[in-house]
Image (cartoon, rainbow, N blue to C red; front, side, top):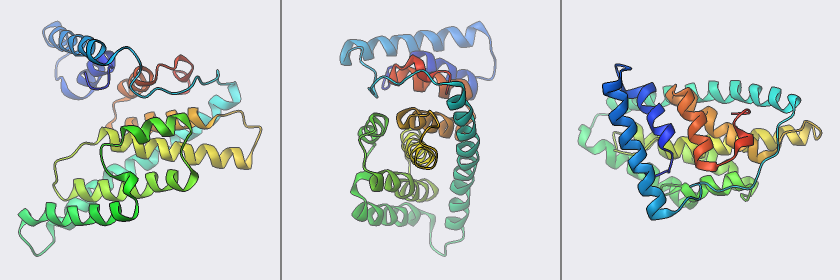
Length: 232
């Protein structure tokens, strides 16, 4: 209902939540997701949540590059996941009661937000701006690094918070940086920055959650870009 992606929602339940792949499990989930998706259309319209300009069909050479990006972003996604647990262990060792941990995490978020205010909030507008290619280079770097720092400390401190939007933001910014770097080094490589951003988003979500099919379909449903399916 939030993202207007009922098919990805069903796949998310299949890949992460359901312990049995039977009709009695899938049918209720599918009906719930379809109803939520219909309400999204009723309340917000049919436009994709993260509207972006059309992307070209990827050439064979560009697809090979996107495969390499998947490897790089996948390894980084694994490191991101491990870092959350590492931060949790560090908070465990603090000589203060656990009820103070979220407050300490909030201080870290506040400091990061002071120097990088665009990292604050849910960040849907940042995701859309990245997908449109309308973000200055320094802001892209900040969304990749500073958003990661504030998110991992906040989550590691025990604060209740989301993971999807931050992972999409970090992955999109990382994909954009990789795409810009490759185009700078090899101008004729055939990739586009917006597709690299989309691939980075999907690969980061897939690498961190291990929800492979969900990541692909989610990126497609929220952007409405059929030419992005194969690179994803």
